[in-house]
Length: 366
Image (tube, rainbow, N blue to C red; front, side):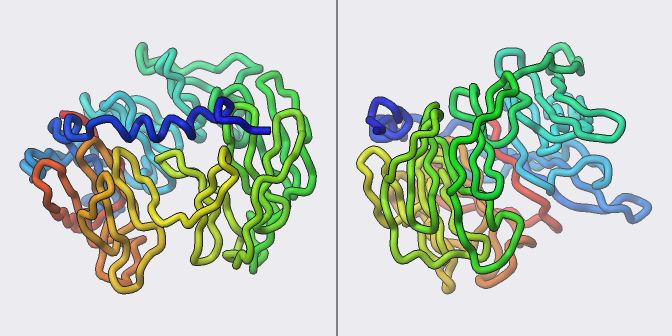
């Protein structure tokens, strides 16, 4: 049985909402994004760009680093910013915003950041090399990570980083840093309308360090613990599945929701309750209307107050700031027109329209 004590992340949310947001509204910020271009030979490039903001308005644009798309890519997965200084790609490449240079060119994929040693951890799986490696930011050193280790665990890692879970077929496997692999169950099925890569893979999220939320057939949600004990949580009916089946997700506000075709439900694992999932937390007090409205896109709120609505896609936030990619109503947001930025200090929107936008990276403090 799950108790409030076992899911601390869920009961902290109301406490965090009491923090006076006005005090965090406006320290100076810069927005980091990437723009496409071409070099003198016509080859496609990607340029890391910094837009400096003051009082919610762009006051300067700074090109940080231009590289050939075949050499350095920001457009193949999520990127992150570490310590307001390092841009780290989904491949594990590291760019130093201060020195404006590539510090590390990865041969694999990003696993995570070890904050204890300030190391970028990558997994390499090549014909000439395979293993888990660390790039230490200070000193700049590339080294193998001694095994076994938690960094080698596949799948979705538990909040404390000590376990991971992987879905294979209708099974969920638990992995430990020692390399041990334990079957948690074999009937965590889901069904979609098409046969696609995730058709049979279970959908799940970690509730805490010991419990997973998953399903046994569309709409039938269950909790499984790391010992393999399974108990029902809630049943949602009817569920119209998307092509690859419904998904259990967690947003940036730590809310858990169940996503079907054109509808989503908010899941409270403590109260064992289900409600409509209308607003998706984007971070720092910002929320986007979850379902896209065909006439305008998504409404956007800041601490519960509507601040605008755009036909928008990706969003990145900082205290008192949000940036979203946007385009004309009905357009393909895979090719956005630009970026809309809102600041709590100005209470207004600023538009950035690069010639060819690649992707948003995030915000840094000036």
